[in-house]
Length: 134
Image (tube, helix red, strand yellow):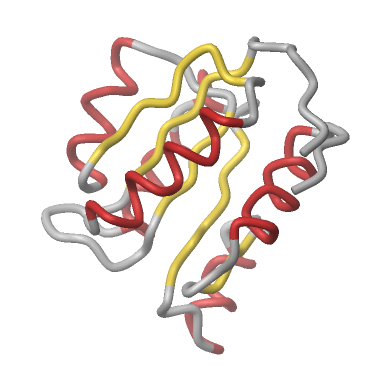
């Protein structure tokens, strides 16, 4: 894997499934372009973490307890301090109506679960405008 050593980005992974969350954290950490990769189990926890830290990239599931991904995304978009944050939705529930709702919110970066490491790395590379190969 061709990995630039930038170590300057921060990421927040919002995923209630521990296995998937841990895998995404491992993949992003291995890219060596993130100074921190922070986990959150749902939108509520993610909002709390965002009060103390800014993130360049947020990867979020849609179907989660307490605060789902759509409500979490709306929360991000309503905060003018978060306008530069890149959001990637990674969900197994990306159906026609859900895609329409995401597009209306201005989201264009969607990964359907299950996914591959290659697809995840490709999307992160695209979103952050990096030349990373999986």
